[in-house]
Amino acid sequence: LEELRGKAARGDLIGLRHACFRLKRVVHARYRLELSEKAAVVDLLLPVVLSRTLTWAKASYFAGVIVSVVKEKEALPTVVPWRPLFGIVRRLFFPCTRVLL
Image (cartoon, rainbow, N blue to C red; front, top):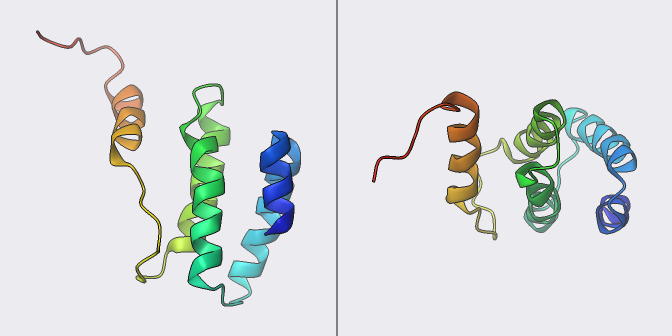
């Protein structure tokens, strides 16, 4: 988790991707993460997913990491804003629609 924090603070996307790969290996090995650690992962990776500078492939990889960490049905002590996520869905699935006034 400290590695994720360091890479996210520096904006090192390649290093962040490698750290996420190692995190996914830990999760798939059935190592149990605490709820506070899961919330920290969501708080670190959500701004990366919502960034408009990433390609969709990179953003979907980081979103997949979030899903693999949070896939259990436990309530996290963090709040995920729904409007930016809805904005991503709207941009991807309805790119040519115009907003009616």
